[in-house]
Image (cartoon, rainbow, N blue to C red; front, top):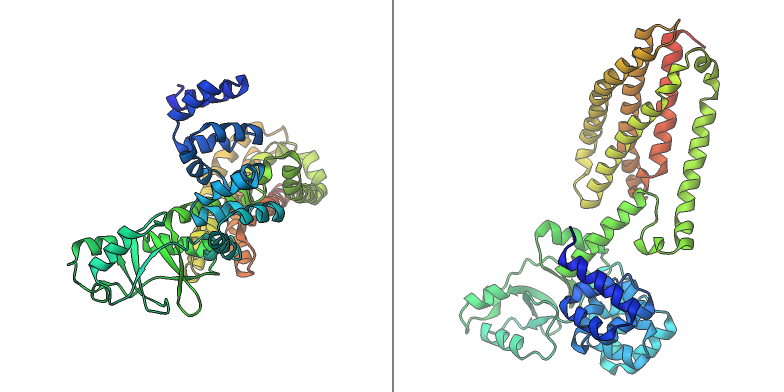
Length: 453
C-alpha cells in the first residue's frame, strides 16, 4: 500500500526531473523539514541546490541540520562562501561544527572568514576537539547562574537570553570562575518560590564528562542514568559545554550502524558503500580473508578423500553441518559484541556467559543433530550402515555447533581483552574458523565410527 508520504516523495522526484519549480515548491511545503532532509540526502548536488533554493529561507537551516552531516557538508561546500556563511550562522553551534568538520580546509576557511569574529572563534574552538568525543558533540550554549541567584533571577536569565540553546532542560550553578557546583531542573525552578536561592534547591551530585571523553561513554552514561543532558567540564571542573540527548541519540544510531557494518565486514560507515570504489576498498580485505579461510578449509579436508569415496553420503551433509555451526557461531558472537558495546557483559559475568552459550550449543546441537541424522539414514548407500551414518551426522552436527558456540563467544571476549574492537569478530574470522573446526571434527568422527582411514 502506497502511503501519503511515499506518494509525496515520488511526486517530488518526478517534478525535479521535469523541472517544474512551481509545483515542486507546493510539494515541498507539504513535507516537513525532516522529510525534505531525508530526500536531500539521496539527491545529487545540483538537485540538492535546486530544492534548497526553492524552500522558504527560514526552513533552510533546520533542513540542513536534519541531513546526514557528510551530505550536508557537500551541499554547503557547493554554495558561495557568503551564502554558506549565512546558512551556517542560522545553525546551532554543535550542528554547524558537525557539518563543517567534513569540509576541506580551503572551503572551511572561506566560510569562517564570512562569519562574525565571535561566531568564527566559537566554531574554531569546537572544531579543535575530536569529533567522536564529548567536546566534539557539545554545545557551548547553556544557562548558568551563581549559587546566590534566586529562582526569579534564573527565570529572568532564561527569558531574556538573546541566543536560546537548542534544548534547555537545566540551569547550571557555577561560581565566579565557572566551576560547576550544581544543577537545577526547569521543573524545580517552576515549583520553587521566586525568592529562594539556587544553592538551596540545586542538585550537587552532577554526572559530568570531560571534553575528551569518548562519545560511546557519553551515550552509555545518558542511557544508564536516564539523562537528557550531560555537562562537559575541563580538568578544573569548569563548565565548557553541554551534550544534549538528541546528539546522544545520533551517537547511539551511529555506533550501532558501525558495529553492524563491522560485523558484516562492510566497513564502518554507510558512506563508505555509496561509491563503487569506496565499497571495493572497504570490503575486499574481508572477502580476501574469507577466501583464504575457505581455501584453508578445503585443503584441510583433502586428507579425507578416501573417506568420501567410500561413503559419498557424507558429502551431502557437509553444507548443513557447516551452516548450523556458522549460524550458532554468529548468534553467540553477536550477543557478546552487543553486550560488550552496551556494558551488559562485565568481568564477573564472563565465565557464566561462556558456560551458558556452550551449553546452548550442546543442547541445540543434540536436538538438531538427531533430526538431521535421522534424515541421513534414509540416503545411506548399499554397504553403509544407516545407523552408523546417522550417528556420524548427528554427533558431527552437535560437535560443530558446540565448537561454534565456544568460538563465537570466546573470540569477541579475547579481542576485547586485547583492546581490539570485538565487532570484527563476527566477520570472516569466526565463520571461517568455525567451518574449519566443525568440518574437521565431522570427518574425524566419521573416520573413527565408520572405521575408514
